[in-house]
Image (cartoon, rainbow, N blue to C red; front, side, top):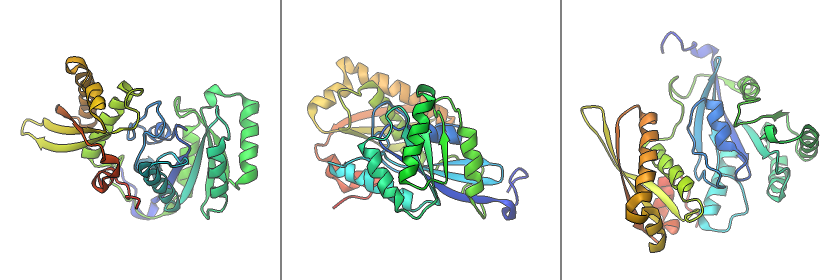
Length: 305
């Protein structure tokens, strides 16, 4: 313990689950709460697949935020695994924060969430996100309706994108943490292994570049990682797609698309590692990857039977 770390007798620690419908802004909010990027963010829904924990320090409190996959009506096996993981993360946390996109309001997905939350025996708070693009009267009506269904302890109005309201959330959650030692070192911001974080960064760049052509039919795995004496690292990753036609799209004409994805991913991975990164991407067709238990284990998901 260094001189900046409070004595264990003065510290507190706990878990806060961030749940919501797809694209509510949970990953953006997690990054804002932690103060740096720990979860990928795209404008596509359902980009978070597994549970990602971001660690924030606020005074003597260590708050471990659990970013869960968006909760929606599952259709595929992967969908079921993501939804099961999200509810599991909520049930295992000390506090549950429901994030609602203030522009969309209470949709059918949100109504299902509210009904299930109403019977959950956990402290619950409501967070209305994207208030920078919503009118005050609409926000107040939305908060009132949600609180009629669920007995929320507090309601917060924030903009995860601008950071407006985020300090108030940290102030509140720090008071809800139980006394006890911190679970993570002071300088650790996530429990995500670097191999998986690197794969998530590449998957984000893949989604951003090919969001129309390759929506959810792909996954990325880090297959090799070698550290060199000069401080650089060589990383090999495989992008799995379901069809040959998708492989051609990922590669692009003369390999230009995958080169662009590799370039942006390499830069961001290097910033995260604070090392020079040599990134090599490969594309393989595996039509049944979404039904392969090993792929689920790689993503940190339980394989639904």
